[in-house]
Length: 112
Length: 119
Image 1 (cartoon, rainbow over the protein chains, first blue to last red):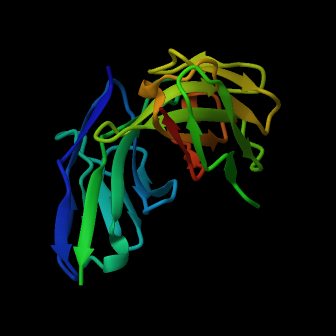
Image 2 (cartoon, chains in turn yellow, purple; image 1 turned 135 degrees about the horizontal axis):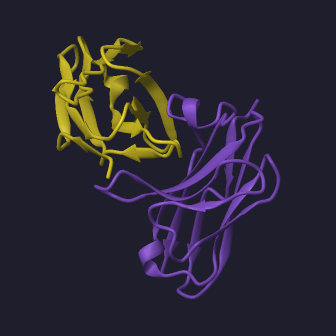
């Protein structure tokens, strides 16, 4: 079945460092790919998405490119801030049911 | 426009007790979902409702029931709570208007979550 694998956390970075959170997926057909962010004590918020191969999703300085050849959707940001500290979830949505399949989440902690 | 709301925010139950988690959305969405979030496991789908009047099992439905009361509301019921149901529960909704061909591209909007502790 469909699945999503994220890099293990937690990830600890200093402010203004470069961020990469790896995400790879297994799916049949042509899924859409998403990154959600969960700030402490809050629900999940959509960060960005890409619906077809080679699409780049971007928001708030974060980017991710849908790479079908490597089945990846890695999240990147050039300069992280303390306010980016959160849990990041990679997810895919495919097939006729539209159900979201989540990765296990990666905790990011940014220190001043 | 409140989006997706959930009640209660936090609940403590004893084993064997029952309770209902409430979810409502004001975005006129057709599809609604219930997930549970456990450490190291991401979110797992419990039940979903593609449209008013329909419900289907997700990945982990055992021990739960749902009711799609109307287009706005989708409740999750634990008839006899167990410690294994200690978790954070999230409700979500999506447009669901385009049918299967566009469902994969739709964004799901999440509520703030209900933290449940079963002793």
